[in-house]
Image (tube, rainbow, N blue to C red; front, side):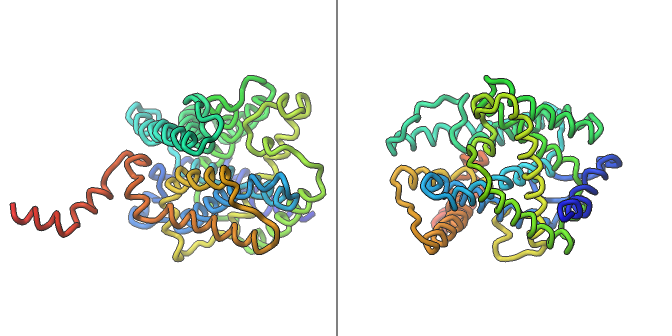
Length: 377
């Protein structure tokens, strides 16, 4: 009964209203700017990005510890049910699906070029740390870099899927996501499996309007979301152990040991993930706070946090033996977010992440030595 009320008060109206979606939203791609309000970022979206990038970092921090702790394994699965699906949904919200050569060229420079550069960077870093598998080629996305490759593909898929009626496009995307698991050779290579499995969340984000998305902010949804999040947590505690790969979406059903029933399990994951997305977004603040600005810089955190994570994993520095250790991991995760979103780090990393040198140029031009030299000439 509670679940029914939750669906009918929040997510169900969103999907139902897609039938009358006029495709009228004008969003500047890859930003939080609404064209009607070009000078004002939407705090809700930035706050959501901050929360989700923290969970991304935290999930990666605790992943090695899941083998020795059932509670941490439960927490890891709980986080992984929503953190990337929600991030992908927000990415879809700001997508436009333009098929022009110039737009695709910009996407290539913005996503594929950083993918190549960071693949090279992490290859050298893995070699430096003495990690196995550093020889991986570009067709096998290194660790979290799969997101850049998939994001590029999602934009291309959107060019086709946005031409279909919303409900037809969504049902087709979900159907492909479920069916792809039955093809054994579709897996981690070129991030093909993740591209198709997570695409429904990207597409849903594209179809949703701002008003539809903000319906999750009602008091009713907030209240029921607590129940939903609690039920998911309890369910993970009492459920039989299952492979992390069900949530990573990078393996076929055959590889996961369920060559026949895998499609049903994936649908179940989709349902839980959708409920968790609604539940988490219901608690995202809509007003600016001292951390809101980080929402503009989450790509830096995402691409760079592997430097910390892989070092921690290789050196096995992080251990958990009590509750306070877990609090320490939360603090470490948030500290990583703050450091990587800081101006000095972004200034150094901007050429890799954005292919620009504007921050370095501004820093150089603002230095007293440069001003003195410029004046003397």
